[in-house]
Length: 175
Image (cartoon, rainbow, N blue to C red; front, side):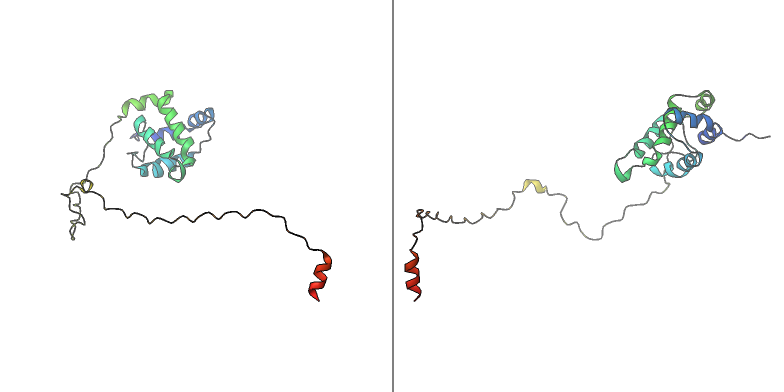
């Protein structure tokens, strides 16, 4: 009978009670399906060399954690409990994980294309020549803004109380 090869994810799933208990000790709720989804589908897309079978390599775990904890829409707050539990398992090994960690190396391999694509050659000449240092030129002269003449202040009229006319004079004036 052949043995199946253990992967970090399969090891966590086989011991999921302990994984969930570790999360509970950290006040985190861990679900098996979400752990599988994040490990196989989400974390490999972060561009930090996370393999789909998971890893116990702490530098890779910390790179995924840094992507998850990015602020705003770039971050993935729903994945925080899962990477925190994964990190805690790597940093504080349970007995069932110690043997597999020794077997796994933390070597990160990246694929390199055999024939890398060549950058496209520009068809038009560059707008600015590369051999001129534009910072060595003096800036263009600035136009001096026209002076706005100041209006002379208007002298304040002396305050005189209004003169009241008797009512009789007003009645004669209307007639």
